[in-house]
Image (cartoon, rainbow, N blue to C red; front, side, top):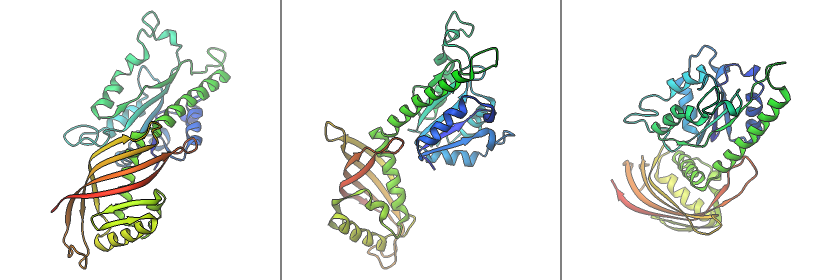
Length: 329
């Protein structure tokens, strides 16, 4: 799954002159993008709610890509929203599953910009017509980003526009969207929050190989754990062996608090302060004698971020990692 999820709401993408160009540019931009073409997946409007919600859970940024139809989204995309933004998923007592994710509206508009003015035949500015979608994002706790849209994006032979103009507009639109995503994708807060979730998701499985962790650890790592202090990659490997001897795979790390502070003016080094609850089953021959544990700890990370190529998330390296127990149940 990609960290950028693109939902294509065009009802007939094969006939599109603009949306196809935009989606192709996104596909070429990054391997971190997953594109779900609703017209191909659900030609009869029978949305697989579980599959669509699972895709959203894996994403940090959700892009709705569509042609502007009758001042709103096409019917298929509206059906997708109605079904997937459900109670206790997107809203309600337990409906926090999309909280903190970014929502980007990217859409093509057939009419000229002048038509979306008080004196134009559409009367209302585009942003006014988007209020229901903006409120949907707010209700779900999502971050509603400035939408990306382009006018005059329809071609009617011998009547309106030229195919070359539409394709040129689509390419320009796609570049603006990619620029926004590239900036957003490497926003320090978003990138570090995403990395923290990924780090603990990997650790919960306690894989045989420590390769994932080592690629994000400095060779000069300072690791201070309740079990003692460890240094460098060899030290981490020593500690990781101890951890796997104590805990069974299938741990659950719950990040209860997270604060990120820049440590330099260049915003390349950061201090991350976390409060994490670990719930885990233990091995019978461990110090916990096979008893389940509920451990609350404070963690302090010092890390750096290194820029990568376009479409790739900045690489994170941890230089210091401190864990201080708070309680054990």
